[in-house]
Length: 115
Length: 114
Image (cartoon, rainbow over all chains, first blue to last red):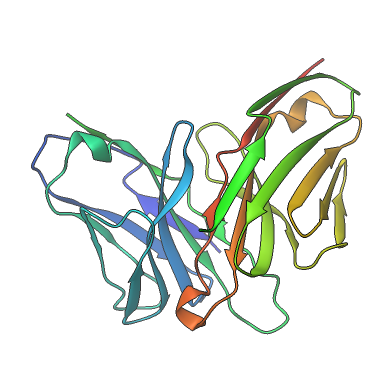
């Protein structure tokens, strides 16, 4: 199992550009989430999904869109990048099975710099 | 409002010097409390899940405990390889669509000197 994979590892954007951060998991997990991590602020939830076709907003959803067409993939779209979106982005997945330890598995992160 | 506060922000220990990290939380109802370890440049790595007050879990030199208001991560005789940022998160009770909501603290950066 590759676990949770994220691409790209690092990206530089200019203000106003758009891009998609890719996230995929091969553990057949129902739940997937996107977080951003900024110094001194911990991990903040952007969007999350409890299954294919279902997405919800987290704490800081503005400026980001998501979709979940398959169980495996959960891309995060920045429609018009702003310097305030400079951050490290983590994707995570977890299972909802009965008796299964409830935890999230995180990807390696995407470092985004918006100039 | 659901909230998680970790203290201290940073902790420097000598190898073998035991200590504890604190995670205080405010949540309408607790489904679970989670501890993670994060190394520089990497994603968080799961350590423990605690579900109810009084519960304890251990892994090597780490022991996590839970009360109704806070959790402690006790580190016994730490080694330099325990140096990392330790994150605490809570998952509040709620409906199905809230099942995947986690609220994280800002972490404690631990540095263990040989």
